[in-house]
Image (cartoon, rainbow, N blue to C red; front, side, top):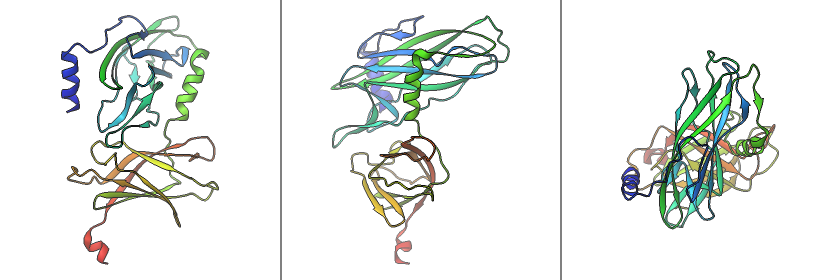
Length: 289
C-alpha cells in the first residue's frame, strides 16, 4: 500500500524538483543537504557523510519503520570504483500522529549518517565526487514525496582533516544513535494480543528509569496506537506492547530500539538501546503448568 501511495502522488506531479550538481535541494517543505564530517579523505580510510533534512514547522519525515503510514527516507549512492558505503545510521525517532494513527519519524531536522570506506587506489591531490539519489516522504495535513540528486566533491590527502562546520551536527546525531550492549538482560514474551519486554539491569546500573518506550523495527507486527505500559518490577522493568490483529505468525526474534529517560551506558550518555532478542510465545498449555 505504501508503494501504491507513492506512485499515485508521483503521477500527480508532487515529487520535488531535482537540483543536479548541488549539495542542497531547496524545494519546500524539506531542504536536503549532503554534508561531510571531513574536509579531505585518505586512501583506504573510512569517513562519514550525512544527509541533513531540514523540515518546515509541522512537517515530518520517517524512521526506518514509519509506523501506521509513511515511507522511510532512502539514499542510493553513486561512488567511485572501490568505495563501499554502509547503511543509514538511524537516530531514534519521535512518536508522531494521533490516538489512532501512530507514526515514527523526525520533525524540524535530522542528520542520517553513513560510513563510507574509500578505495586504496585513490591518490593524494585527486578530487573525489560523492553522489546520492535521495527520496523521502514528508507529511503534515497532506503527504508529499520529495527527491534530490546531491553531489559533493572531496579532495584526497595523505591525512584526513575534520570539517568543523558540521562537527556539532554529527555529535548531536550520534547522541541519538542506538547502542548494543550485552550486559542488559532483555527478554520478550508474547501472550495473546500483547508482548511483554522484560529488562534486567546490570550490576553497575545505580540509576532508576522512570520511563522507557519501545520502537519496533519490524513493520506490521505491533499495534502502534495501543498505549505501551511501562512498569518497574522486582527484577527490573517491563513494557507491555500491543500486537497487531493482522499478524498471523510471531517471528522468532524481536528487533527494535528501547528509548529511556536515562543512559543505558556507564561510559557515555546514550538513551537508546538496540535489541535483537529471541521471542518466546506463551501457549495455553504453558499457562496451565
